[in-house]
Amino acid sequence: MVTAKAKYGSPILIVDDDETILEALADLLSVRGYDVVPANNGAGALDYLRNNPPPRLVIHDLVMPVMDGWRLRKEMKKDSALTHLPVVVMSALADPDGIDADAVLLKPIDITQLFDTVDKLAGNLHTDSSLSDKKRY
Amino acid sequence: MSSSLDAAKAAETSIRQAEQEEAEATLRGDVAALDGLWTEELLAYSSSNLYAGKQVLLGLIGSGALRLLSHRRITLQVIVDGDRALAVGNEHSQFDGPMAGRIMLSSYLNVWTWQADRWRLFGRHVGLITLMKADPTVN
Image 1 (cartoon, rainbow over the protein chains, first blue to last red):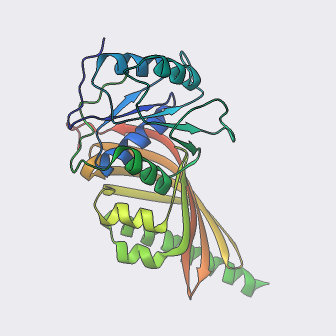
Image 2 (image 1 turned 180 degrees about the horizontal axis):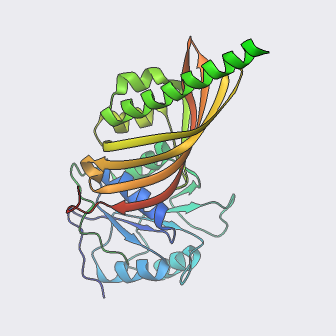
C-alpha cells in the first residue's frame, strides 16, 4: 500500500529497474529543484499512481521486470485519471515502437536534454528539495 | 632512444600532476581552475547512462548542486601517445550539499589532450562501483 506523499507539491515519478540510473536521475532532478518518487517497475509505478495525487510527470524505462514500460503505458491510458499525465520514455532502443509519449530520451541520456525536457513538461517550479523521505515503489 | 623515453616519462609525470590538480579543483568546486583544465569539448560519461558537456558540469559545480566533502583519486596507469594520453584509476568521493551523505566508489578513464601549452581533459568515463550512504556515526 502506498503511504508516501510528495514533500513539495506534486513530484516526478521515475521508473527504472536499474538502481544506479534511478539514483542518478533522482539526484539530478532533486538538485534541479524537483521532488522525486522512484519506482522499480511498472507495477510499482501503477500502485503509486492509483493511490496518490497525480505526479507532475512520469519518466519511465521500457524494459523492466514484473511490468514493462509498454504495459505501464497501456494501463495508464485505460485509466481516465492517468491518461492525461505527461510521460517521458527512456530507452536504449533506437526506435521505441508503439509508445505514445510526450518525449523520448534515448540512453545514454544527455543531461542537458533531460533538464530541457523535464523543465518543459513539468515546469521547474521548486526551489527546494530533499533526497530524504523517499519511498521506493 | 633514451631521450624519447625521457620525454614519455616527463609526459606521464605531467599527466599524473594534471590528474591530481583536476581532482583537487573538483573537490574545491573551483570552476575557474576546472575551466582551464577542461577542453571546451569535454564530454563526461557515466555508467549510470548519463553524459554531459563542460558547461553543464561547470553549472552544476558552480551552483553548488554538485559539491564534494572529500575526493580521493588514485591514478593507476597512464599511457601517452603524442598529444593524447589516457589515465585510468579509481576515486572515492563523499558528497556534500544536496547529495550530502552519499559516498561513491568509482573507476574512471580520463582522456587528456595537449592543447594551448598544457594538458587538458577532453573525455571522461566514470564507472560506478558502489554508491552508498555515509554512516553519520563514523568519521
